[in-house]
Image (tube, rainbow, N blue to C red; front, side, top):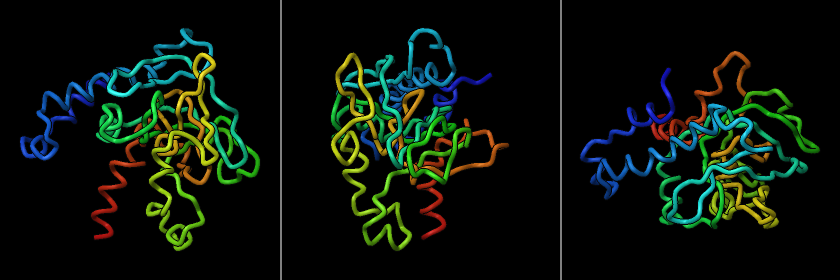
Length: 231
């Protein structure tokens, strides 16, 4: 059965033109992505079951390898949802943040192509319920002109929403050893077994859909489809 690292090795074979555009060699790209894939494979395959008491993440300090560790996670607040992450895609944006080329606070948890199953909901959440399969989309404020015009992907607050490392009030949903661990990377921090996300970022999918295949819809596939369909 294919493993996540093996799939990534197969898919992440950029052409010379792509590598040149990224100012990276094929080997450099592979060396960046492969360790992330192995960490995610541990998280998503259940191979860490029993090693930690609670939720588990692959966390980072800037320009350092991912570290798989047990953490504490909040209960969902009003408007929030606790999602058990079934799978997460690996995006070049995660690699940029991991190496400090995309400014994000550290230590923290990356991951922004997550999909999973709802485990708990906060007050006021009506669009999903425990047991719902979901793709975790990007956050949006719901109040700016673009959101009100039905274009939440172009939310005017998208910058701070995706990179500030926590909620709008400055709090984080994660702690490790009693210390705050930055969360909410792109609204989800889905390099983890569980994620706290805003309910309005979730897209429910049918029960018979293999949710483990849907993570890239949140970013990679959605971005490409948007470029084609809206051009």
